[in-house]
Image (tube, rainbow, N blue to C red; front, side, top):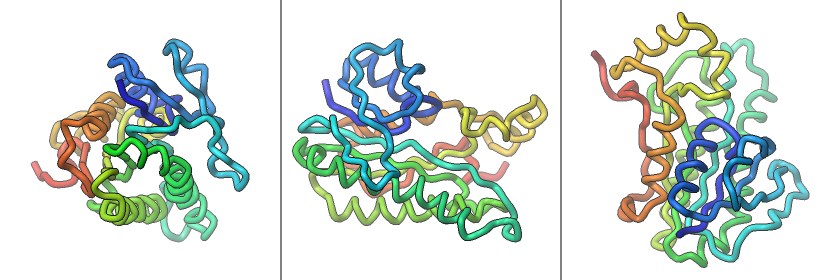
Length: 232
């Protein structure tokens, strides 16, 4: 039984991960505004949200954490001419600053564990290069740099890795997959010919949290149906 903190556990990948880890008997601390989605999971510990606010103090974390997953993200797809500096700032605030604040708050508990694992999220668009992704890819690219830097700094006691999904069928991506035609078009872009679901990505995160990945750190794991590396 291990102690895990999941930020953004109320929907999508975070919710699927919470269900997986809960089923295995782990103790979960969660940060989410959508508590209703988690009511069927008993024994959860809710930490006050608001990590993007200056006065957030992360009350309620345990003395030791075996893992931390930061799930919040943005899908802000606009052409360059339509992007304003505030768009870049907003994406950076959610994707990078939020992750940094949570990591700083949880650092002592992660270090106390001695064998902790941190998982952050990027996107296939960082390595692949896709039109209209300038703002979100810039902030997610920063996440990859942050993770590698922290993996070096915090080794050997804390591992840090990144999962980089392709478009996944979650509430965050709902407007991009809002019709059968959009689903089919997106599925055909992937060598595996389907859209990923939350459970696909959550399973990869669960692996990176586990002792089975104990010799993996500083890596970006593509969970993208082959989109980042294959051409068919």
